[in-house]
Image 1 (cartoon, rainbow, N blue to C red):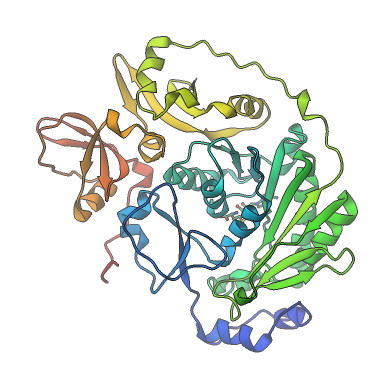
Image 2 (image 1 turned 90 degrees about the vertical axis):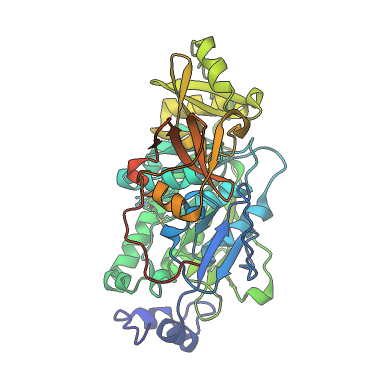
Length: 460
Ligand SMILES: C[S@@+](CC[C@H](N)C(=O)[O-])C[C@H]1O[C@@H](n2cnc3c(N)ncnc32)[C@H](O)[C@@H]1O
């Protein structure tokens, strides 16, 4: 990117920000391209070898160039997520505050799902992740990314932060990756510069306070709040930490960082709350601010949560669908309309509570519908990490065939097998097809199919 034209007053407004180096910063925006980075899915291992690690994230790697992810079947299989490197710092924070007991985690501002898939990688099966997005049109991308990731302990909701007051003291950890003025993304998205103004920074600050005040009651006593923005502005970062510590009796948590990362550790003016700033030109990544605080005061008694969700179960159908899941004894099976779903047993009660208080868009893994003695398997099952692959046919595809399949084109396969089959690439499922005597019916979801023309350059 050449000759970055920063908004009026932008650079001046950053002069006193901790660790800000205008020379490095301008140079990075004018002459250094934003690095490309991906985060591998620890539950979907492939033979891909990468060597340049993102230092603050166990599964994060830099790539030498930006390949066409759309034309990489492993991307569609959920083997990795394309994520800006600085954002992966949430991995360091989570691993530091991680408790031995099962936790309930809320990602309040979750779409498109970068930090949700990250959290989902570090959570155990008996931990619960609620990934929420307020904007309805952004929920499908969040749900699709989590479906690709394949974990079974996630619930996706579409609610306003205020609605979470219906779950007082419910969450052990809340991540608020707040909507912000977006200056941290200027290098990747120079168009964002046109929207920046000091007035907008102030509006964002007010909205951030409102979001945090709304969700605060849902955090348990001694629970952790992780706050992040992709803004450099004090008003949206350290000032928010001061406001939180003043308003809510929270204590700041200092996160150990390695000096070699060149992350800037800051403290807020009034309460000396710790924060972590990432500047392009100093770190290999974009702008990020992150901080972690702990709630000290008592929440409402979580024991007030009671539920009664004993659905009548069709035993014949249940027997059929159980076969599709590994270790079905660890799962609670339930129906939504005609679809069977499964979620870890430990989340049965949470699911029931949440379903009475919030608007659920996806929960656990959708297995499919029972039709007579058959199960029509769902796409979510194909991509999930709990599918019992021994119970289903599998057809391994070459790369060209995989792309045809992902385009939802007709594919021809030389096989004598018949019936539902997982279509796999490099051993990882991409979706379902039905093998018939003379043809293959492609059941890749229409809304997910590749529409783009093939790239001219070589795919790496
Ligand atoms: C920085 S983005 C989140 C990125 C996401 N955490 C990730 O890592 O992929 C902020 C999100 O907050 C949502 N948002 C916007 N206004 C909001 C509000 N008033 N309350 C809660 N969320 C809001 C946006 O739709 C957006 O998805």
